[in-house]
Length: 152
Image (cartoon, rainbow, N blue to C red; front, side, top):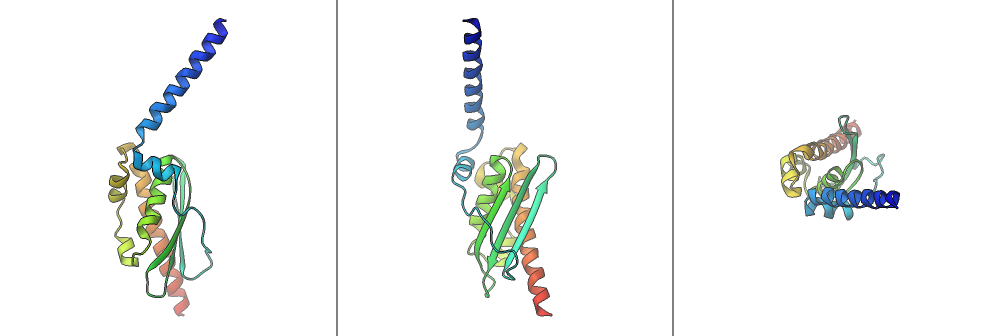
């Protein structure tokens, strides 16, 4: 009976701990984590697609963000795949929403501080929004590199 009581107490403690952890995430993070937008991949060999792959060795988060640009320089699609915590996934999801419909220049101006503010990220999770900004810039640079190569 004592063993059963200990198991029940341990399970209750785990459940309560999980609820506390969930409560630490802002509703915007939870929304993007539970309902991520634009998950997937684009054809990386397409000259109108830019791919950014970035990672944070400190926490193990890896983020791939891709953009598809039309002939007028407008981002018409964006996809992501992220291996990481809820804040990293939410940052990726939000970044893909924000770049869609923007010009290359407008997308390049998206800052991690704006992503962090929208998601209400705590200081310990700011690196997730930094990864998203870096992924956007890497995707834009890859797109520009491809366009430069096709000129020659």
